[in-house]
Amino acid sequence: MFNKNKQPILLFIFITVFIAGLLDLKYKGLFYQLLPGPVREYLDDKFR
Image (cartoon, rainbow, N blue to C red; front, side, top):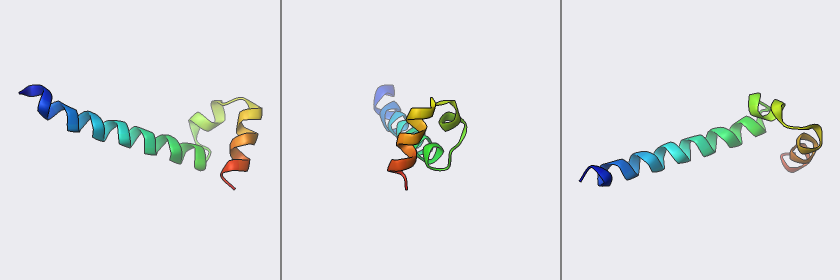
């Protein structure tokens, strides 16, 4: 019975982390700054 209640919480956490990652890339946050230069250039082209 505990697993039924756990699944929606895990889904919510996964979606939140995914959205936070996309926003980090878009607004050039910490994760973005840790990426190698060529990857950052590629992402800059995608998010323009």
